[in-house]
Image 1 (cartoon, helix red, strand yellow):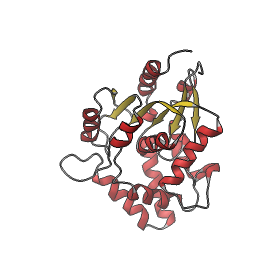
Image 2 (cartoon, helix red, strand yellow):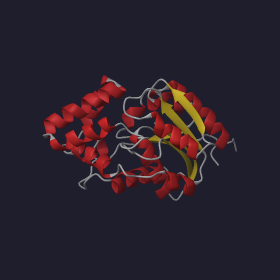
Image 3 (spheres, helix red, strand yellow):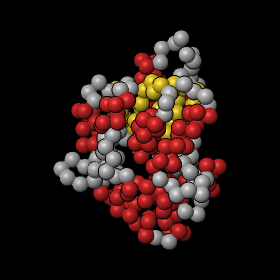
Length: 243
């Protein structure tokens, strides 16, 4: 067993999302990050879909030769983290999920995601490439800042924006609860307080379904939050004791 915990940071789209807290995590853990296909060096001639996205995450774990790890996701990367954990043959020591929810339900009395998110994704699939990229990057800048938006702009393949939007639309009916129960790994759920896209009902329902999960409510986007990084370290201490 490694003395330093192993963390795979699973992105919504790019490793750049984790830039603010990555140095904090690297102080005490071995950390792996990656981009989705269509960004940077992970471009692919295959259309972007859930299976390909999962495969890239599994390949990153296998490339490093890790036999166990804690998977960390935020925003849509939290769902991808669960899917990667499900597909990987290694030992998932824990799952830390920002913007935690069990579904991407946008309708009904307890939506997990604002309908605005689905409308935004649908618009991206209908625009021309230049307009779609501009609109997409404006959303990235609002969430992560101009540096991350500029970095992702430099990595975009011609079709990434619209394929990514379609990927989210195609998987909005996902149900993570049975997958998490099957995995049986310790859980850490973080909520972004007053988030414009993730509804509090989604987090509340996740905590109700898994009452033993460690929880955090933070004013910042979890993947950019030093508070989340500090709480993640405490969570890891409970599931990855020293050798």
